[in-house]
Length: 176
Ligand code: 5GP
Ligand code: MG
Image 1 (cartoon, rainbow, N blue to C red):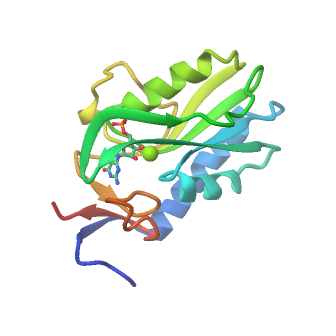
Image 2: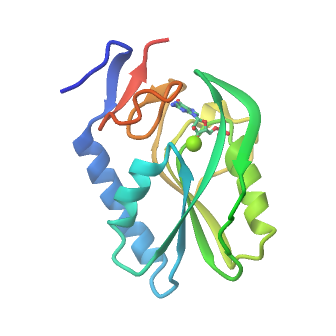
């Protein structure tokens, strides 16, 4: 298995991730039965989780992609950028935002506000990871969470450090 020297420890193995995503898919399938939800992938980090999660959905769903970024290296800049060209039409839709990790929650709270302005039927957030101890937007909660973790900087399964390590099939703690 490829473990770069920058990875200190594996936090979740490929098998553990697969199992957890399966469970999340089952929950979402149950909750969205008969509603034809729109799954919105927040690029780039959520891409692996997103493609795994939608294939666990045992109902009809549609997919869209947007882009957001706020990190440089391992530091959150607090300056969240949303790429809003060709924004999907979400009016009247049940939207499930699929994210890799909620940290300060600046990104998700901003995006959620932005989406709610477009008159969707509902907006929920499914994040594979959550770091509750890092919250700046204190009242923000993701509706579906794979794992809550301690304050580590993690890479793999879509998560990067300066665009590296996104392809690792596991989630590892980055050596800082
Ligand atoms: P927030 O706006 O919640 O602070 O930041 C969320 C975004 O920051 C995530 O979508 C992710 O791109 C990035 N991020 C937050 N924590 C980590 C981490 O531990 N590792 C990596 N690679 N990215 C993180
Ligand atoms: Mg992200």
